[in-house]
Image (cartoon, rainbow, N blue to C red):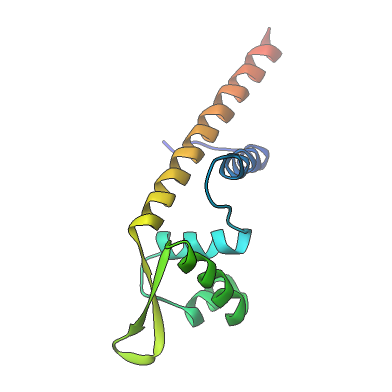
Length: 127
């Protein structure tokens, strides 16, 4: 059975996740960089600058800048598309996969903390 969360709970989980990502040792990604990263890692398919720009509804130069940073961090790799040499495919990397695992772990902790806090509030109001 899927858990139901209010929009306030979801925003709280997002906040806790972002704060944990910022506080930990390591890189900080902008919202756009994180959006591009998550789209590349969570959505199947061969990702291109054009496709990412269309999917995220932002300009191709904005996607290129985000990919420049993600490439610099070795979270993604660019490779010429063998089917169309004018096009560039975005590929996942081991370091990017590790960052995604860490992000999932942080989100899991934020979710657990949010559930505990919600249960405490329910108990306090019923007593």
